[in-house]
Length: 304
Image (cartoon, rainbow, N blue to C red; front, side, top):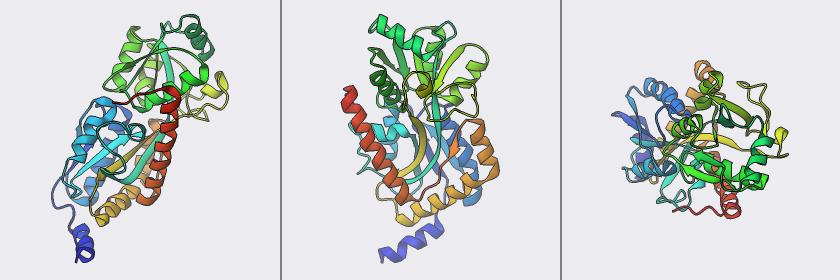
């Protein structure tokens, strides 16, 4: 009876508006990508797809809101790679959610204030000269920016202070103001400030240079051979959501991501579209969780 009901449910779903909770602040890349996809999904489904921001604790506030929601497909979570980095926060990624689909990936940029160091090598040298006096900001403990920065800190062999924020935009603002020394952030948030001269970009975290910043070297080119970190976004549903609904959302999302105007929009963000089945995305996320655990052990990150 359950097997017969599941396809019927998918055919009738959605019968009312769908709520998509974004785990980070408005205006960030995760939020922009969600708001790019939402109206397209709404057109396919014939129902409004409402985006709601729930910020705080590296994305765990938004994640918990979805974990506690009914498992009927009407409340979905858009999170970042930080989802895989938070195994000790108040949700269990293996128990509380089901993977639906990835959305996009992009490099992060290492930026300092306009009067900051002129290169990655200079930043590292400054940190070595004054251990503990150089600080960096992230979107919260356990966020992608936190792990990226700790991976950088370990590889560079430096002692720096972590200042967590509710979102990447806040870290950008305090870097501009000089209250923190640097931040790894998304191209989306940093690029307008780079172009206006309020931020100086030192490097990108990916293995290849960004098409939006072709003159900017990678961290690997600059000072730390082999360094690589990529920021990605994905969609989850509460555990217990009917498999047929998960498959429908995933398939429809693949159609949206393949649309030329969506790909063009992603390109303006310096992002590459990602497409996987729920099963493939599950394997991808599990591998990311294992990698994050290794970084956490090496960095001594204590997630609470």
